[in-house]
Amino acid sequence: MAAFRYKITKYDPRFYGGPGGAYTRDEWTSISDIGKTFDGVELTREEYERVEGLYLEAVRTGLEAAGIERLRVCGLEDHGDAPASLEEGQPVTVPEAVEICRALLREAGFWCRLEDGDRAYVHVGYDYYLYLGTPVDVGAALAPLEEAGLFVEAGFSSPFAE
Image (cartoon, rainbow, N blue to C red; front, side, top):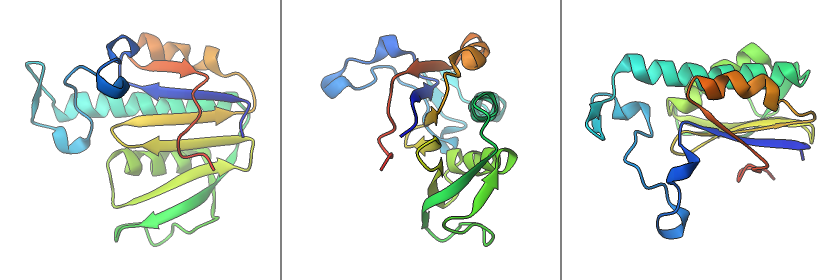
């Protein structure tokens, strides 16, 4: 599997440690949380899209910094809403991968992994977790996203890796 592995989230690592290592802060985890209040602050569409944009920039930046131009759709699960054009094994460009990740983050009725064999992967997990694996260290390229509010943790393998 990819030599360099990252967990990329909006969750501050300082707040893990509840029962079973659970995250202890009350935070939104889904697009369906728009309009709900977390820690006294309402999640607006604008804030959701700002954070979503950071995740998508992490995908684009990480893949481009690693020199990855294409991934393949793997493990496609169609829950009734997968785009008709999306097929198992289909190659996708980085811009296409970004749009697939947007749909996955928005819980669009399908799920898949995006992979380039053992070289690279992008996996979107439950509760707004993103896993990126690359053949080269892309930590420096992702650093500006940390300044914008994401947490990029190196050394985390994807739980979806086969």
